[in-house]
Amino acid sequence: MRDVNEDALLAYPPVFLVADGMGGHDAGDLASRIAVEEFAQLAGQAAASADDVHACFVRTAARIRNEFTGGRQGGTTVAGVAVTEHDGGSYWLVFNVGDSRVYRWDGDKLEQVSVDHSVVQELIDLGEIDAAQAETHPERHVLTRALGTGDAPEPDYWLLPAGLQDRLLICTDGLTRELGEPALRDVLGGTSDPQDAAALLVRLALEHGARDNVSAVVVDVATAAGAHEDVHITVPRVDADRGPHVWDEMLNGATVPRFYAPGSSPSDPPHEEDRS
Image 1 (cartoon, rainbow, N blue to C red):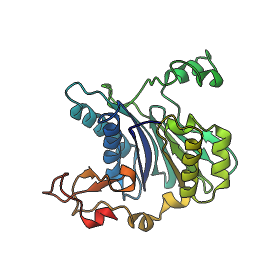
Image 2: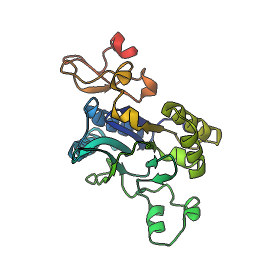
Image 3: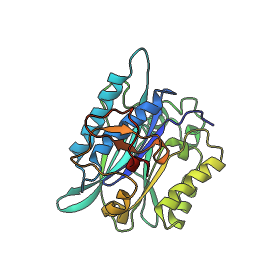
């Protein structure tokens, strides 16, 4: 039902995320894209540390503040997971600012890992309302944290051992407003391919009314641990010959950053390899 898509996403090992922009056309959509562009600088690494991820948050917040001039206001949520290493083992580094979410499905139960940064979540934590009341609360859309709103970024982090059966769902609130946890469990537990699972979740949300933009990324352990060559078929990898990130509207629904060679302009026509 929205005229402008303010969501953006990144699904490129070792980082997977969604961003839900706020501020409308040329504000919220730009803020979410800035987040993806900054986090995309981690693309192609074998793993990402907490310092790597936090640096992306800092750069995103700074760019939003610097680029939003002339009275424009905008910001974005960011929720996601990075593959990281700790004491010789593989872990999920879950991160979140705002009310986009990260869930973990272990083949048996669904767990919401992230915690919403919202007024209603604070009221729930205080015991003043329950989850059912939160769904109709007049301030259910009010966030207590977001990137680009003037304050220093305050993401939450969780470090989880990566299980062999783990499947992670990363989504904007456009999905969770339409589908409850039983529906999420049914799709994640009953759809073997992660791409098919993500597509089905979005389709079900659209069929349910989709009052907001809907974005979902589903990550399986096998995908996070490798499969870089499969991803490389459609998404160019960072290398020494490529320059800063700019946006390619023609690629995957304007959600994947492309790269331009040093000396060229973001307004230059994309190379043919960018159109694949």
